[in-house]
Image (cartoon, rainbow, N blue to C red; front, top):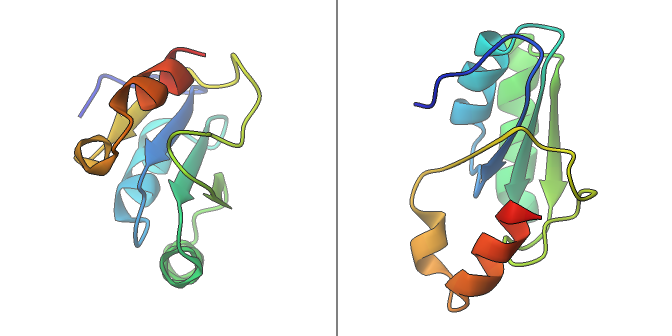
Length: 100
């Protein structure tokens, strides 16, 4: 996983059940924020349950597509992903969104 610092804002593309979001939230400390982005309500519901059970408070789960990230430009310090970029049919759009 990327070298993370306390207070950073991280985005996990294709966050699924939220496990990487929860682990990352611990690494950025309570001063940091971690967003999980997934396109299905089922995975977001699971991720929210997992975060609540873990007592993680500095996380937010968003519904959306990785080609159109629903966050303001320049609001993220680090982007992580476990291969969901490979599933996109428009990888250029994903990379442009990450760079935005």
